[in-house]
Image (tube, rainbow, N blue to C red; front, side):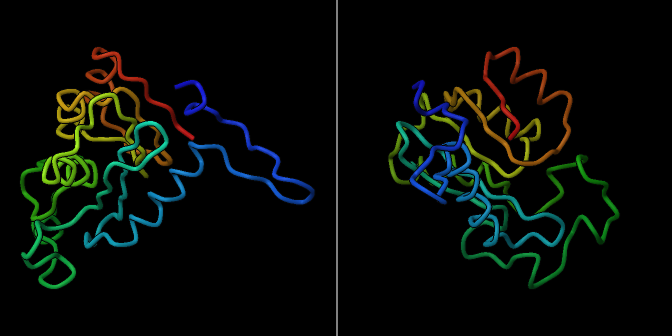
Length: 161
């Protein structure tokens, strides 16, 4: 577990720096986010245990349904501010999709680390707690004080890189 938390960059020889594990997985979720179909924000997530990717997810409509890039954004049309009324959206969050993909394929995420381009919202935070995820590493900000409070109460470590 300690090796998984390595934060420094490792030397790979002259002129070459090898990224630490947290940076490595954050780079990967940055690429995953490019698949997002949300018009407002592109988010990517990955669930990792023992330095192995268990599942990934990005934000967008459920599989097989039309997404916002095709039909427009319900939240924009109704002028819903960011962080409010999460249920009024066609899309799932990246964290939700990563958890769902693991469940769909019978992969336990208990004890995993969630890597995500942004901090989770309260809905995702509750799913993270119940899924048994023990650590979160985020690359960007999204402030949801209730989510932060709940994750702290559950003893889930959250690191911002």
